[in-house]
Length: 89
Image 1 (tube, rainbow, N blue to C red):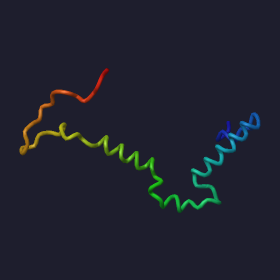
Image 2: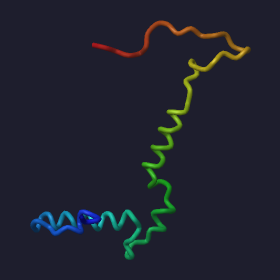
Image 3: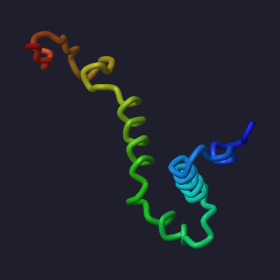
Image 4: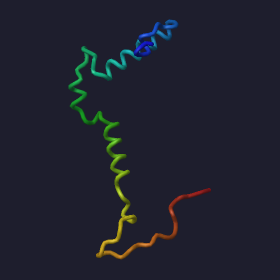
């Protein structure tokens, strides 16, 4: 069994072209393209959109809404009632 999809023979020219693009993309993503200067990309945090989005999502998942926090002795307990803000038509 081939290790990767491009280790198998191509069925036709279109399939071979697709395998070649997949191979080049994988090599590039893994940092194996000798003709590309990865340091300029690695040093630019503005390009880390996925990492930033994942970190933001993790923050929202860990964050407790203010109304759900336990009472402390300085503030009265809030009882939730009324509209939920959800519109159903």
